[in-house]
Length: 160
Image 1 (cartoon, rainbow, N blue to C red):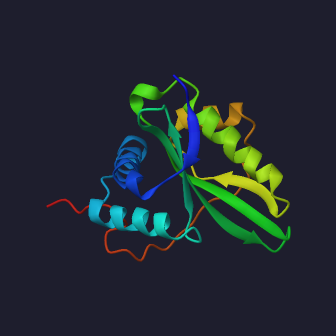
Image 2 (image 1 turned 180 degrees about the vertical axis):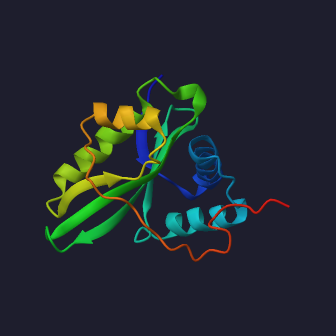
């Protein structure tokens, strides 16, 4: 299997929506509103200021994804790149897909003098992901994420 990392294209919309939906279900037990999710992914695909997706492709189809957004740090006079929506299809796990995505992103960040660090979101109950992230050298930054959610359902589908 030859893996390559590439920027997402508009034709990846369906893959990204499915990956994000499966990610939410597998890690948090949440069913996302697919229409709202598709809108959010499409907006990011059309405007890099909102974020950019990287795709891991095995030469036949996409098998992994991650979303990168930016946050300005006045304390460090640089950009933090935030990783979210990280997903590898079940049949491709354990084959280095995440490692390749991570190494690609880390190398990009290292070449950009304005990037002061990379951070990522992970559900605190996702022990498997936490173990992987610690193994590659990510450290607990000591922060907790707090939010006010203005979407009617918090991005989740309301049960009938």
